[in-house]
Length: 77
Image (cartoon, rainbow, N blue to C red; front, side):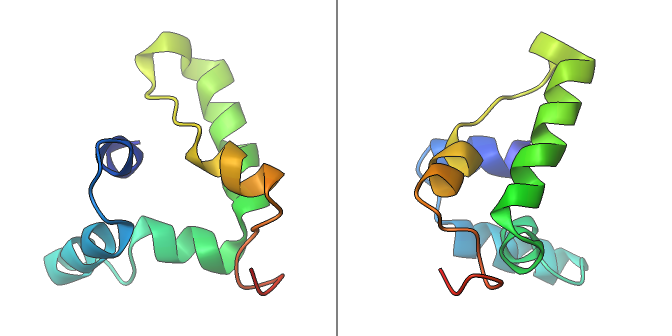
């Protein structure tokens, strides 16, 4: 959610992923989403948002990518 907030604020997702990897994570959240599929990202986001409601940051990034059929590496887009 924090990474999505940063992207929605104008920060480059590649820069966020680089910072997360430098911090010690095996990969950043956007690379993980690209590899697993944006449809999975959207599905998980819906579950989290329905469970926690307004306590979550709700980005439209995944939904926009999903609607544009840009699902990540598994579809080549």
